[in-house]
Image (cartoon, rainbow, N blue to C red; front, side, top):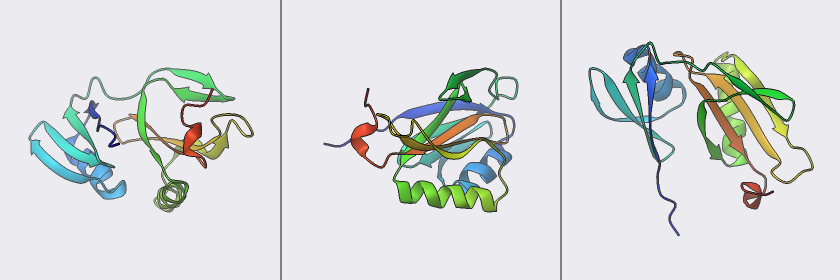
Length: 139
């Protein structure tokens, strides 16, 4: 069964900065655009960076497995190999992690590799991976 693609629109403070970050560092192909927005292919999903500097950035956190996770965040679930490759690419680019690459919920249902960082506009992103895909929704 095919998984439907999601669409997410989010605020950024600068379109050129968003292009460099999402297109350059993350590797998202660019789709349609206008002076105030740009579409990206985010691992097969459509995300749209909209110029809205006053709305950009995360503001609150919530405790999850001993870490303060940004409440407003988005990301994608990768394979473990792709997650490791991304983590190394981000480290090489000297990206500042707000939650360092780690495994959370060790030995419990839902065990996952995770990492969090901010885009240049302060939007929080989480990339995660599961050794067993059945654990994505495990209780």
